[in-house]
Image (cartoon, rainbow, N blue to C red; front, side, top):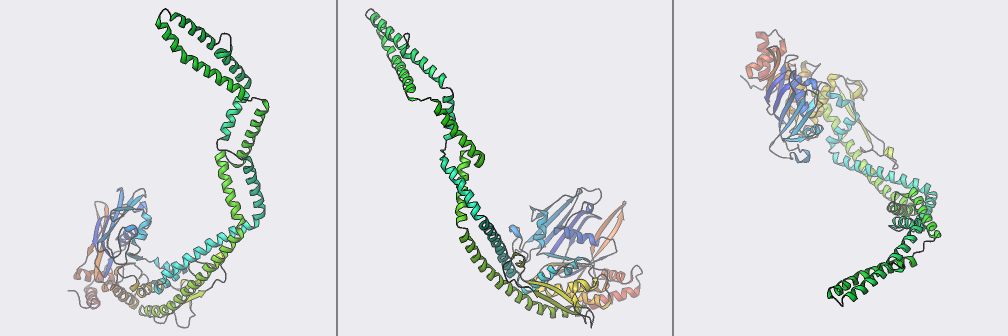
Amino acid sequence: MLRFLRIRNLATIEDLQIEFEDGFSILTGETGAGKSIIIDSIRLACGEKADAEMVRTGRPEASVEAVFSAAATAAGPDGLFEAGDPEEVMIQRTVADDGSGKAYCGGVLVPVRRLKDLTAALVDIYGQNDHVFLLRLDSHRDYVDQFARTLTLREDVARTAQDIRRMLRQRDEWRNRERERGQRLDFLSYQIREIEKADLKPDEEQDLRAQRHVFKNAAKISELVDQALDISYAGEASITGALAKLEHALAELGTFDPAFAEMGAALSPLGIVVKEVANGLSRYRNRVDLAPEKLEAIEERLSLIESLKRKYGADLRDIRFYLETIRREREDLVRVQGKLADVATALAAAFAAYVQKANALTEARTKAARALETQIEDEIGLLGMKKARFAIKVESAPATSPEAERIKDTGFDDIEFLISPNPGEQLRPLRKVASGGELSRIMLALKAVGKDRAEGKTLIFDEIDAGIGGKTAEFIARKLRALAASHQILCITHLPQIASFARHHYRIEKTVARDRTFTAVKKLEFEERVEEVARLMAGSRVSEASLASARDMLHHNQGGRGA
């Protein structure tokens, strides 16, 4: 239930705070006083679209804070508040003068669009145009399902329908593959053979490019190897010969001075190193075959690799990955007939389950529709439509095969409300023949019938009594008071009959000060209510007679409460 509302810098409201009570509350005031602004602020708190024009002139932003008691039915998503939580829930919404804004739930920043989800179990608002609900056939089906308590079954039907559509897509995919199977298998087999025949090694391309570099420089390499061998060992002036002569000279000098002998000994490792270099050069010259035909073979192998890369991937790793992919695809195609059989079996089972659940949903809806017809007829009779007949048409079109266009998330049924407002008239679609006043009363009747299924909500009626009066207004007032036994009712009205039935009365007033317009709200005591009801009855010409009539109306409709 809505406990507290604070509005700042919204249109003509500068800073307004209202504490609401349980039960039936009425809001009245002169036309243009700001009643609709208060309802608009609650709509903002419930996630309705904001407009920068709503921000008070000269202010950077408007804000709305609404505090709700978290009723047992008001479980919020994402753990922001839990079902049965006795604590209060605060919703805050800001709207900047550029149209942007923020939303908070319990002090936690949430996307503005989430406010509708968060407040759906807390508030319902019905304005003069909100009975458009009755003009949508989907709404008729939703209402019947809510009344019949079949929403869980409908969700189960929807999940099964979605499974069937998924299986149908799989079946169509496998059927397409079956048609392409032979040609595709030939193509995949050719590609697999081509790649497998190449027998590619992980680092082969890099190794081949290194070998090609060597073979392209074969003459230069041979020349350098021979030159190095001459310098190190084979030539007359080789390092090996020079070291041998140096060692001999140092050995002879060693007979005269031992230090020279030590120098000769130090040369020994150098001689070993030079010999090893010479041996390595000799082995390389004897082992490496730099024949031109070897270079030709390397070029052919690299050309093959380049050809495979153009077809199957940027490098050898990509080609191996592609090979594994097409191997799996070939295996799938080989098993395609088995896949089709598996899908057909699963589809048949899912379709049978869907038909069973959808039939159960049809049966529950039909039973609920018959009970609803009687209850709604009784309710609209109490609201001044005593001769009206009301019916609910449940038209089923069961699916005989699992085809996508016949498998609906909502089951087999189309549901439509029918009405005959006057005796002798044929039942016709409500959305085509009901007047605005009739729609308002039927909307109220639907809410009255469903009151036990959404206890604890705040129901806001914004001038749904437009275009009615007399006894019908009194019928609506009595119905609103009855609804207030299980809901918090907030109602904006211009009718004294309805205003006099409310337990709490708030007057919206507009004043002008310092060339600015201000809207204020005052909760009225009994004598103030007498004056306000008299104004609703007589307009600006309030007389003693109208005051007496208003007092009498209040005493009567309040059951003796008051002054």
